[in-house]
Length: 437
Image (cartoon, rainbow, N blue to C red; front, side, top):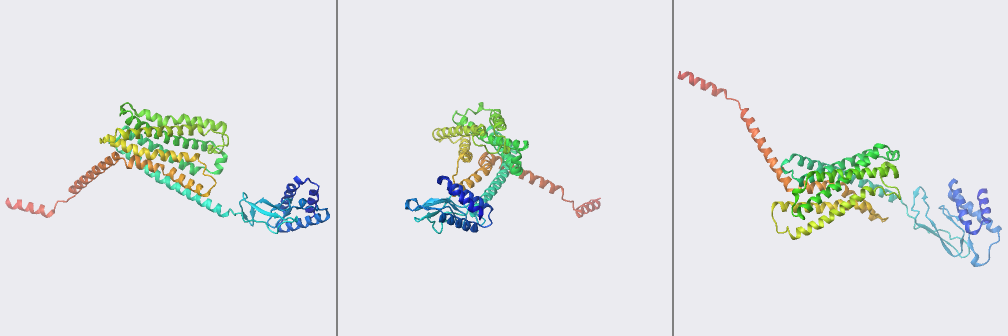
């Protein structure tokens, strides 16, 4: 009580412009150490009334004002002119519940220089439910991510072994598909490594191995885009440049898909080491743009691929529409697969540059849409480039029928060898021979 009186007495001599802020700071500082906000509010208001009665109050209506007051909620109302509505931020914590401090609470200073009995706290919203919903949606997004990556990994492995076993379909086009699937397998594998090894403690420690894991993940992420660029290059050469695929070599696409991303990631790692060497190189610091060292080339190959696709579709609509050769049909199917997968890959990546805003619905759409597309990319690649590939399906069907035939022949041979000779027949034959003699 004595401390509050001293604070109030000292505040009388402060300039009116700074008196309110200084007094509220003093009150809130005392409130931090007080056991009861209600008792502190009543003590402060009694002190203010005592000092107001002892001092000379202005008589003009225009000079009337409301003194600094602390209500029972714990909100400090500064010295304010009469007949004004005063706004203050909502309390951060009330009865153990957190509130949104971006909204305001309102209280009117009446024309006689006294505060209204109660403030309007209707705009203050508890954020407890929002936090619970946010945690629930985050957990759902994590489940979708893990489920999608597991399904994608299984589909990618099946597709990989199909391309490995079916030697009859190993043309350049399917070799590009095979390498694209391999890049997605390695990316998904490093994603699992990131999820299982990274933790807040590891991020803060910023050890060497976690930075290497991040660099590996970004490298395989880049190879996905460059192998998609290889798909676009092959289709553009085969369709737009009048089927001149004989000049294409496998080593060209290996350089595009596996070699070009490596120096890009090395340059990015050097930039991170010197300018943003923290938190295992995840995320980026404000004002530092080292991530664009590898993100820029990825955006560039996406743009070039979209240009390729536009040109390819234009040619397909004019020259190849009437053609019905098997090779043309394969090109059409490959173009359809690329038309589906390239926007899918591009949209997922471009979402990282989009700010979903503070609207709850837009944030939820962003979280779920991004989690689904990113995690199921490998599954879509496997479906369009392997499982729906007529060459792969025909070769797999022939291989299965051949295996069935070999299995049935082997079973019949085993059955024929395992049939025993009847003892009655042997004895009867030997008896017949002996009687004829």
